[in-house]
Image (tube, rainbow, N blue to C red; front, side, top):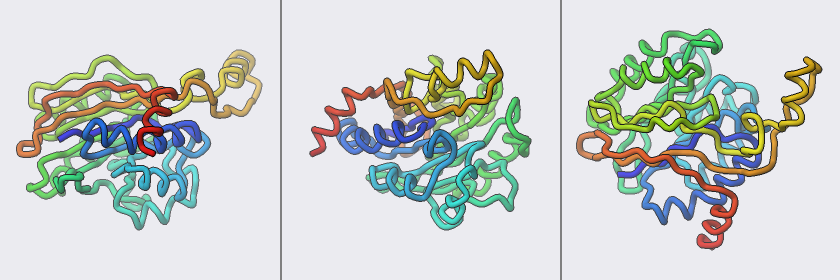
Length: 270
């Protein structure tokens, strides 16, 4: 079984390249399930019901989120009523949204998906390690393929989560920093791991925002809008190969899809 996970979608450029490229990429690469982190999809912060709908229609099976989850208030009914979009599992119980879900692959295999948020240099939240343990207790035993998006700032936090869940989930993939790491690996217990899968959006930027906004604001302290950039749009993600019988992973590979490649994929899909 092959799972595609795409890192933080940033703004309209990120949404556009995903909706253009993923239908054909999914077919050509025999992808069984697509998961994306969409917390920055609307203007660089938050997500809206219309973007949720677009991503699902393009072939995304599940959307994970992070610290910007509620920036657009109109997403709350979607979080409450849809099972294919999730809040971090260590958010308060009363916070809108579901902490985990089970989605089916194209071949009918069940996959449990959940996320958690780190606490180092992040907003105050409950213990992520306790939260993921609780989620694993709730997931039915017959769902052996289990995917965790750990949305965190500190690399040590993410490595700790990888080791904490090793052998209990199929994959732990980090998001939030928007910069991909080169440490993809299969941990001893059979869990695919990467500290951060990177950003899907404009890479001629500072983490997806215009350089000529972020740089002078940082140097001068003048308040400037951090508008989403537009150039060098790329998809960053990983493809994970999982044994559907055991839930153990055998391979994790980083992928990049640039605009030219997305154009070719889109033409192939017509």
